[in-house]
Image 1 (cartoon, rainbow, N blue to C red):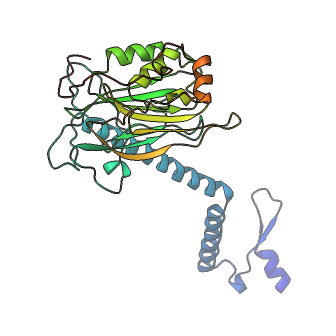
Image 2: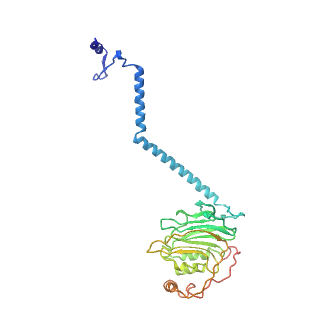
Image 3: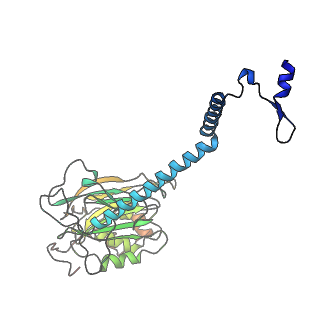
Length: 331
């Protein structure tokens, strides 16, 4: 009986190869049971997909693309906002409204890379002074930075900053940044720096100099004299991979009090200069003390300077009266 029943309800698949038996007595073809089995198989397939390495890779790729897109859109917006604000920015730390930027007549504006109130100084500068931050970089891959009145105008190799001597000029009566320049005095003769200082920088302008990487190789005797006349007391000591900065004023009498130098050892870069200062718009020079030339100075003058240069003259003084109230009509 059982054998006949099974044989009666036996059928073959479409190809006639594999027998399929439906045991009606045991309810094997019940539709509810089939639905449950199909659902279980679907759930198992979904779990397999979610736990597969390919799926995780796709999800991670989507997340990375979203982050990169957001960063790109945000940075573009941030730089666009800074460029617009650089046209007319007031110095919020002052009691009065004094203009930081105000370029007209087709003059190029100076890019503001980053805004840092008071350039990171802990105390607010007085009304007749302004904050700066000078960073010379530890080596040739650690880019220089310069902040003036709360705005970084040199940073991360994106602007005028570069190897050699970097210069920024501030007009002391209108509180305006006139120009930001770089002179590669490692690769090129520094005569272009002499000409620029002579023709573009006016008497009374505050000038910020600082080095990056190497600045002494093509720094000529005449340029050292020019910088000495502008108030430097340490430019004669600048040699291979030294770090140096000076904040001075064209027409200053004496030596600027805002100057520092560090010396290199065994062709390694000198210690980095990382200075935050309040600089007055009217800089008073320290008097020059006439003294016998030291052995180091004699050696330097014999090797670098002509005998009749101002630095190597013992009786030399920074002379000449200066009227800082003059406008930029003359040097």
